[in-house]
Amino acid sequence: MLKIKTYSQENKPNQYERENILNFLFKHLEQYGDPKQDIEKCLKYALKESPSFGGFILTAVQEEKIVGAVIVNETGMKDYIPENILVYIATDASQRGKGIGKALMQKAIETANGNIALHVEPDNPAKKLYEKLGFTNKYLEMRLNK
Image 1 (cartoon, rainbow, N blue to C red):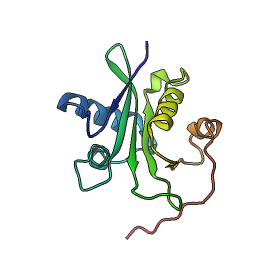
Image 2 (image 1 turned 60 degrees about the horizontal axis):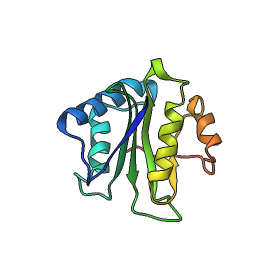
Image 3 (image 1 turned 180 degrees about the vertical axis):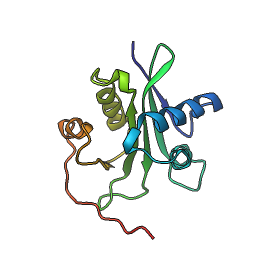
C-alpha cells in the first residue's frame, strides 16, 4: 500500500529521513538531476532552514521504503511568477508506470497554496503526465549562467 508523507517547517523529517530523501532524489533523478549539495539546498529551503519562503516535501513510501519524492519551494511571488515551483520529482526506476508519480503530483497540487511552475526537459516522459494534470507550456525558459 502506497503512503504519502508530507514534511514542512512544522513537520520536519528526522536526520535519517532527510538522508533517505536526499539520497533517493540524487539517485533517481538520473540525467535530470543536480549535484547532491544543490538538492540539499532545495530541501533546506522547503523546510525554511535557510532565509527563504519555505515549501514542502512529499515522499511516497511502500513497505517502509521511499519509492517517490517531490520538493516544492515557495517563490514568495504571485500572479506574474507562480507562488510555487516544483523543483524535484522522482520515482524509483523499478516502480515507474504504477501511478506513483501521478499520486505525488496530485498531492503536490492539493498541498500547494497557489499556482505551481515546473521545468521539464522536452524529452522527459513525465511531460505527458504534467500535461494530463493541466500544466501548460506558456514560455520558453532562457538562462544566463554567470
